Image (tube, rainbow, N blue to C red):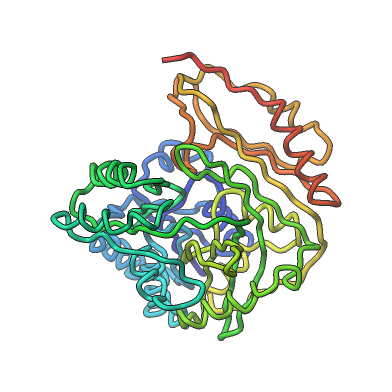
Amino acid sequence: MKSIVFLGTNKSGSSYEGIKAAKRLGYETILLTNRTIFVEEREGFQEIDEIRLTNMSDTEDIFSAINNLIVEEKIIDCFISFLDEYVYLAAMLTNIICSSPLTFEPLKIMTDKILTRTYVTGKNYNPFFKVLSSPETMIDEINDLKDQFPLIIKAPQSNGSKDVILVEDIWECQKGVKQLHRKNSEIPLLVEEYLEGPQYLIEVVVYHSKIMITAIVEQEVTKGERFIITGYSICPRMSLEQLAGLKETVYSIIEDFQLRNGTCHLKMKLTENGWKLIEINPRMAGGAKNRMIEEAFGYNLAEQTIKLYAGLEPNFTKVHENAVYTHYLIVGSIGKLLKVSGRDAAKDQAGVIEVYTKGERGQIVTPPRSMGQRYGYVLAAAETKDLAKECAINGAQQIQFYLQPI
């Protein structure tokens, strides 16, 4: 039986749906992970055929686990990961061991925000940026930025809005730098121009140099202590023609990165100076995006990604077209979670397709400082974008998080 080896996964979202997709396609699914929960709660992960506990921070340990699979004569069609940390390694292994012509070199650049910005220096879609690299000269470098505020400060491996801070003046910039340096005082930091305008997530698949935009997702950003996306919308009637210049900009970015076989997603903003690249990530987007795309168009992006990695041609023929909206759940105060109510009532609302909540009794929950501190979502579909949004929000209003203040 042919196997697919997954390097890491989350318990839900696009990464786990990739495992489900591989199982549907008839593959044996093998997971390399350092998360013991997949062993401790084994009955909850029936789509995984084998779980091999591995030190995922040690490349040699990963190679040893893979060598064991080869010695056991596993027929491995590909290695794949839907997690930033392992995407490059999985694509490289697939290219070398499985002889699938994945373009893995650009993925390493995409996983580092500083490498990405530097790589596309001078491109029209690349906003102003500066790298703060030396702790000794950082104060002087910050003072040089006094005419550029507001600005964004990022750690080079930031994702999910973690380690991304908006600063309005020199004092806030110095405070933000100190905050990010508490984790690691030696890392360089990226300072970027703050951009105004609507924000979109664009899913891209490239097969034998053919670039395919498989979904355009409009994002609603809540600006608090961090930039948290609380709403995602797919409207089939929003064509590339309505977003003038987006297709050309996306194609230009993919060509600049020389991606010939692979997947990625971009976050773009439409500013008064045209389309600007917020970030590019070397994988499909996580969370509910796979489910949204499937409800909107009928194809499963995780499944088509599996096929691409296995050397097969992906298929993005639309089965149907629906407007889809996902509303994410956040809490407004810090506290100990006592219970969550209203899930069944939310599911009964018109248009609601899926309700997901996370968080266990006794867990400390907080207002979001990263995407990981969203505590669920309501996904709804309807004929129009506005109606789908209304259905999702109506469903979300049924859900209540009961907290004990601390």
